[in-house]
Image 1 (cartoon, rainbow, N blue to C red):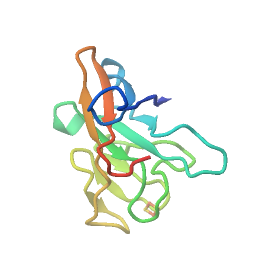
Image 2: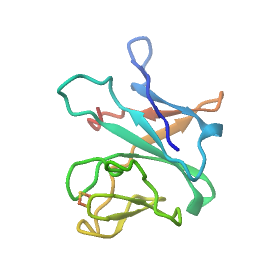
Image 3: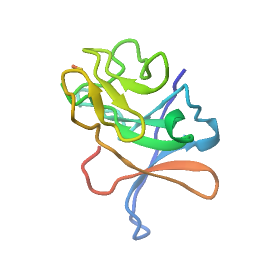
Length: 140
Ligand code: FES
């Protein structure tokens, strides 16, 4: 199961960079990556999402990556929407089978072997909410 969310907060009233709400940390389980919209959906425009995970291979640490394969710039889950391998140890691109490590996004197998998913800065606030930080890397 996965959920799609994403609200953004601008930086007009503070010096903080814009950030995108990525949901409650406590509700993100190791077996269910969360997809987060990085910008409001607009008809006819490329829609980008982040995949946020609780990394079972790294003590449950949270990670966020741009949900875009390094072979072709398309979402990892394909039509199935399933982002993890059966053993839960890799993110998988369902189009041609590229496997990405959870802890650093490194592609260990597939047509884009040796590349990395694009990492996104992620923080958890005092209320247990995860935020993706738009640090100017053109993620939206
Ligand atoms: S598009 Fe992802 S492996 Fe080819």
